[in-house]
Length: 233
Image (cartoon, rainbow, N blue to C red; front, side, top):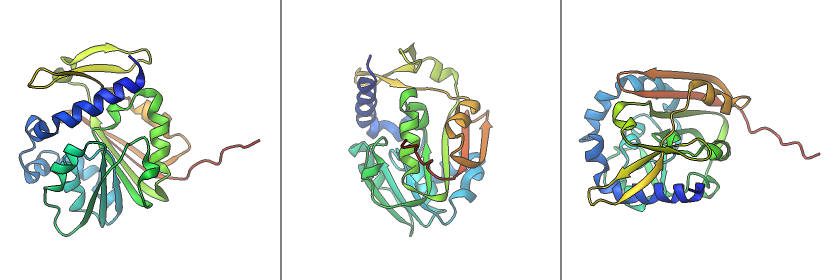
């Protein structure tokens, strides 16, 4: 299976799953989400307080609502029109929240520069050979000194049951089945703290990594330093 094929399958899966996503994830309302995930939110809310945030892979807007309560503004992006339609229907208080269809690997098409970036449950879906491209793309949208927050899942029994195979670049591949029987394959990697730190070597200050075992989530926060100058010689 080629890398482009798996990315296309993931995009197709999440587009079709969008109307079911909140129910499947148990997100009945934002107040319940805030209560459930409070230990995670406490780990990063100071990083985003009052910031102008670029959110990547916002999905149906559940984390966007969390951000909106704490930030100056949010530009929430996703490649799924169906997910963004649902996100737009939710309440974000008085915070300036806008939505834009965007490929996470082509953020140069997103206007503006931001003082913070955020993505939840996205890193695990990045094929390993795309990680550097993605991180560099995010950093090009940020001011020097911007805060960055990534949150994602840790392995669990329910996720283990979806295991299908490893592909030729050692990505863990899950099989996902929709209620109508359609099946898709998605990347679902579980990076270690060391792997995350290696990606950010020389690019970030104040790196903090946190695991919450009962919630099966990790949180990574850091301060973006600058994009290294490439040697043109």
